[in-house]
Image 1 (tube, rainbow over the protein chains, first blue to last red):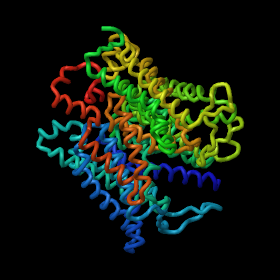
Image 2 (cartoon, each protein chain N blue to C red; image 1 turned 90 degrees about the vertical axis):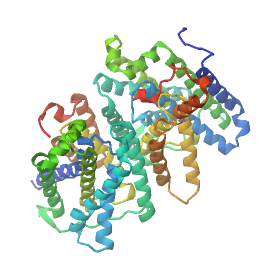
Image 3 (cartoon, chains in turn red, blue; image 1 turned 90 degrees about the horizontal axis):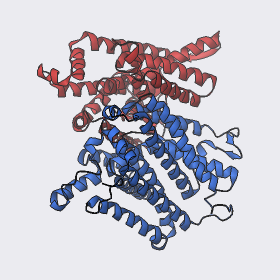
Image 4 (cartoon, rainbow over the protein chains, first blue to last red; image 1 turned 135 degrees about the horizontal axis):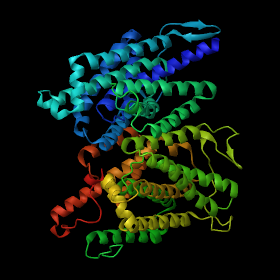
Length: 289
Length: 350
């Protein structure tokens, strides 16, 4: 019984952290169709921001994670978009290569500043007991934050004028600009929001993962596969795909090893893409967002 | 026009002849002009050039963006290492190192092409497969992971792999000179083979599919089968490269399946020029030399330099070195103009 409860928490936690890691990519790649290979490095930057703020500057960890990390990475996102990414819109393969170069550069810069050593912050709050097991309260809070985050993204995209403009511009940039919308600015803001969400993910995951300059590489493949399997409805698709993949990964990790969990995730993804080449939302939740 | 279309009036024909001539000269002169250390390095460059050729072929001519070409390289390397560890005589392992990756490419290709995956999806599936191999190989350190007498050794990698020997005699191991000759010979054969293939009916259909899949299909070509064949040829060549690459330092570890290596191959192709065969080789050799140079001095880290170079390249020379050089040459030397057939410019290759 205790084991079952623990397993459920583990699975929920796996889903939540995968969905969290994918949120920014769902915007940048899922909506804008910009293949951002530096996604993992944006997360890494968010994690470093949190580490520096809490450890060196002594700022409250919640403020560092929830406010400073997204803002810092969002600003980096704006700089990168204006100086670099905007030249590549519509050229998918070039974007892939360009952002891969960017990811290496970011790893290089962070290594030069902090060195190639493992940093980390301890998770806030204590733990509670599930039968004979101890579960960190932070992991439960994380699940809650992810739920709120996705509700927030969904509401902004569907219920606000900003979301409407963003969606319209992604769907038909020419039409949007005829209607008097500065598409350049919409792209910039959307990219910045995506980057900010990625920074938030990096900050929130910092206490439960290792913070090293090359930490991003671990996320790139998983997040891209999740968003692609999600399909055209970026937000819903990512959530559903995270649900499937998170469950598979956690259960396999529990039963066997974390390595097999990661392998299982990728195999399930390949099979799913064979069955649903348009992604989950290409077939099932067609009208979703 | 003959089937191969060899036309001595076209300067591209002379380009091909020049490339082959340079490689043949290197084949014979190599061991005399390089010292032993350089010879080892050049042998690795040659093996990697075969890998670059395979990528240049399937992506530049077949239009298949495979993000996991390194998987076939790695499979070739591991197949050779495991087989030679069991058999001890290298003829069969050498052939297996080509056949196994080719068979794997055929199987994977069947899933992808008959499932009509394309573009980004194909890239991500191939990347995923590469990472599966990476994760799997890294977790095989335990003693229970062994194929025959050869343990897989996990992230430590398999070391002191027996080099290639003369066919039939397991004790007559090849010297570094001979391995260089073998690698260079393979490269020349692959290059000429691909040139001929691209000029043949098969190669023309491959380019037609790259240009417009639907149109090729409506003309009656089986696009799926054709892509599968292209992909399998690429897999076989990458496997060969892997086998030769193992002979460079008798060592292979799971890093051959890592994301960095996979992306590096794409970079060679893009920097050298997509839609050409020499371009990827130039890109490959150039970047590898740069990597060696940076690795030797401790001032900056590789990530910083590599990242910067890639970013500048994509912004400044998006077409790649060779096509850009060709454009410049055609602009300033009018005699070279008016030659539309043959290698297709990169804009069309997308």
